Amino acid sequence: MILGAGDHSSASNSFDSRPVLIVTGLVQEARIAAGPGLTVICSSSDPQQLRMLLAVFDPKTVRGVVSFGVAGGLDPKLRTGDIILATEVMAGARRWVVAPELSRELLAGADLERQRIVRGGLVGVEKVVGARDAKAALHSETGAAGVDMESHIAADYAAEAGLPFAALRVVSDPASRALPSLVATAIKPNGDIDLRKVLRGVARNPATIKALVSTGIDFNRALRSLRGCRSLLVDGGGLVA
Image (cartoon, rainbow, N blue to C red):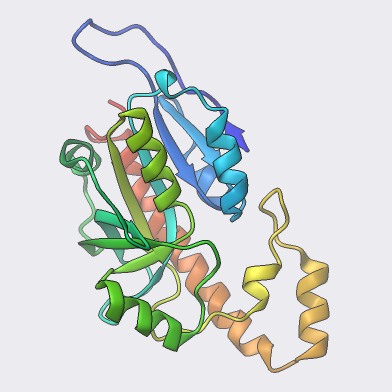
């Protein structure tokens, strides 16, 4: 899914008026990010779908790429709602370093006194990492602060296109929280939650209700933090003046 191509309003010759491409995984993240000066692509938590969307997207129409949304926490010191401003993105043996100038733009004029921002690495994966021991193993192996399913694809696209890249992710499920398996299977291709699948899963295993409630509370808290991050995109001297 691709939301509006942004506002190509006139600007001086010294300013690149092309929008910034925002890459998200969930519809909720895409709706938060959408606005003038920004082009938003949503993968619906499907890495292959994201690759297909980017394969037909013209990189000449944007001036940079930002991965934006929630992430799983790997660093045990991080809590739900904490903001990770990536220093690098890794996937397997590959590494992508973020563009310092784009990260500086994200933080320019930001007023986030109530939100904790940390700098650290992000790990890109093809499937949800939900188990506590899997998160601990990934943190031990990589030292990364968080994990998501879009940043490595967005970083690779930006590198191939010669575009600056940055990533901003908010911790949803911390390292100490295990995600119910339903979370990985109950997302429709359009990004909506498949309530029937959730209800069937709960009917088969009522013990998952508590975990789902905790996960929902964490996710809503992360979305509130992410909404606060929108000022980094469009206000106070951020990506879009």
